[in-house]
Image (cartoon, rainbow, N blue to C red):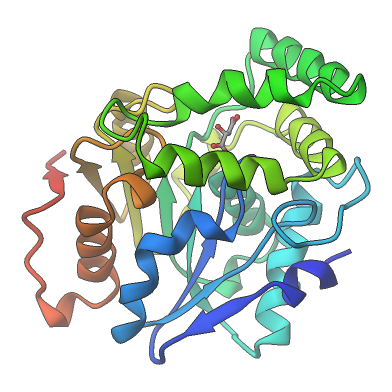
Length: 269
Ligand code: MLT
């Protein structure tokens, strides 16, 4: 199951390894604004099973299926440890990976994500979305999401078109598998205090799905962590404001370069 993701892996650059894990229902094209980071880092992106060009997974893939895909990718590329950077569902995957294989994680970057499990309402919504996709009505699910993913500045721009095309590439099995995986995911809040690697929490200033106040609360519970708010961005902060996002990521991974972030607002605890 893990192999299809490996087949879609793209890498560029050399040095410190950063592996990028996309959110739902997107694919590795989420990270197009990060390509310039390959001047400083070895950057790896890939499609989770059922998204982008990756083969569909079984619909009971679960978060553990996705984190196994990440481990298989690291093994295939002979990467022992890396900075793992996940956005939203990608963050849920990294919490699972932290529980199963923390020795593969050198640093964590948690973008526009949350540690809590779904509420009962959210689970019901996911169940309804699964039923709609099974009835051939996936457009209703995806169209409903598009507006909420993006901040006001990105709506109606090429970013919206780009986001829509990622959604269109997702397979039905991929969407159903991810909805079920997210619906069944455990609460990762109890794990936060035990995260023993440097962690950067990033959140779009205008993110309505995982709002800045929630990101700040999550960051407060992770010992060696910092929080950066990405100005003007919604839920897809790396795509909506790549300059600020990249500056903060680089400052975190290669502080010796002293890139001196002013574009992203570091929030002091
Ligand atoms: C994502 O961006 O991955 C999703 O918004 C996550 C979710 O639906 O919980």
